[in-house]
Length: 285
Image (cartoon, rainbow, N blue to C red):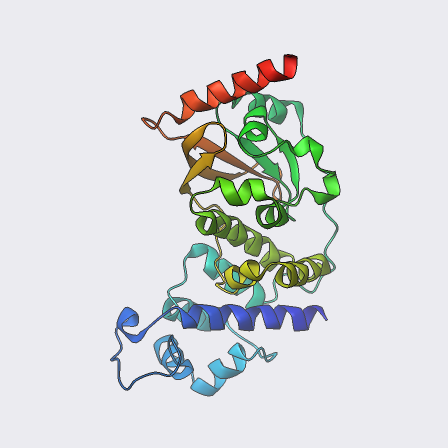
């Protein structure tokens, strides 16, 4: 089952990346009108320096031997970035995906890390594990997003909350871009832990519950640490603009801290301070 899952993930990824390219993007003639978008398999094979039959087998998810030199050619042909290339190698070379995947350890936020969260008072920050469950946050995040303490731990999956909670859907001006970055991070974990059947079950549930998830997941975006600028329309604070930076926590390979830094000259930090002060007064009252 693990091998089938890995090969299917590899097949889906190659098809998704091929569909996003056109002949002009890779220096090939346009030729006759195409019935479907993207490069043809024979064109990818030509660019990668492999036979069309061999590439077709690979994209069909057949269990064939593949060398790093061939993967290098395919990476170049599909114009993969560093994270996408790592994802491809992990699936194609079966780097640990056949080994049983351990369940995520219960994350304990250390005092130093908790101190960092507190010091980031004017930067909403969220800590997640490898399944994207929220395991830590600061006061600013609770004010800008929602009070995660009111959500049972088993329901604090960030990916699901992005789709399920109206607070997130109404907050981001460009909700699709906001969500796309986190799905790209989620896919990097999926590539590393494809032997963990939890991911398969979760993805199936999300595709059944949220058509938008299926569409974004099929885009096959991969990024270990996307840096994006996001505009929020907060119900109380109004327009707020943040730079989102995603960082791995030192010493914890599977723990990530997402920090929203107010963009200068947008009034965001001042609005955040007023929002937090107002909520503090309301809580005391």
